[in-house]
Amino acid sequence: MLGTIGRAGEVMRLFNGAKPEWGVTEIAACLRLPKSTTHDVLTSLAEVGLIRHTESNRYRLGWGLLSLSQVLLATTEFRNRGLQVMTELVAALGETVHLGVVDGPEVVYLEKLQGTRAVQVSLSGTGRRVPANCTAIGKTILADLSWHELQAVFRLPDALPALTGNSITDLTVLRSELSQVRRQGYAHDFEEAAPEICCVGAPIRDSGTRVVAALSITVPAYRFTKEKDRYTRHVIDAAASMSFPESLD
Image (cartoon, rainbow, N blue to C red; front, side, top):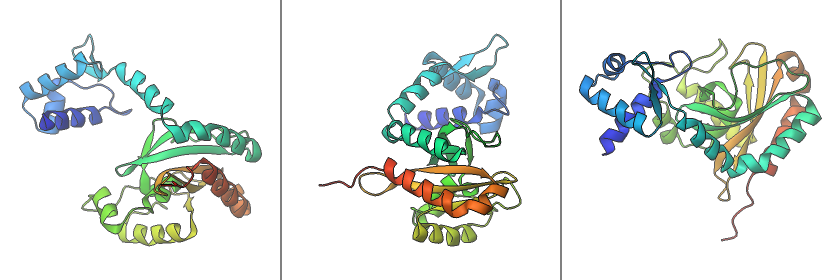
């Protein structure tokens, strides 16, 4: 059973914006699975609505995922508690605000509120994924991990993924920066995810003080360099207000 679930997960992860549609033969070749096994997995996923069979005898993600994603967002307590905080942050600064979590080596954005004076950031958006090492949100959350946990997240033989020439691609360099993030309580992204865009992120903690998510402010580089300290203070305060009170147990 566990093997079947694992294969289903591998199949689901193949679908993305660059390639939203797959055929049985393509998936079998990509995952090095027998075609009969691939067909069985696809049939099972289609039966529960996680993928759908197209008229051209290919497969796309199913509409059932949309319902599940809405349930997930609606029941994510720190997101619901923080929406008002994020709205107030946009009103105060006019910049774009993001809320995200880390899933493996990637940041998953749970919410994005577009600023009134901000440039459009096409890289981000609810449900979008980007390499965690390239973002302020990602570095903020990764800083809570031990070195052993960090190595397990980035199981890569070569360099870490990069989005710009400023992205950190060496795990040892990233470890050093994460140590600083942990000490100071916030992380910066200096054009590491997108050219001419900077971010500052701060941690959102659960009742046990574990970092479960992060909040960030995204700012054009020319404005960020002039008011970096102001943006940093705002995001730290906002993230702290979204964190859970310490447990009394």
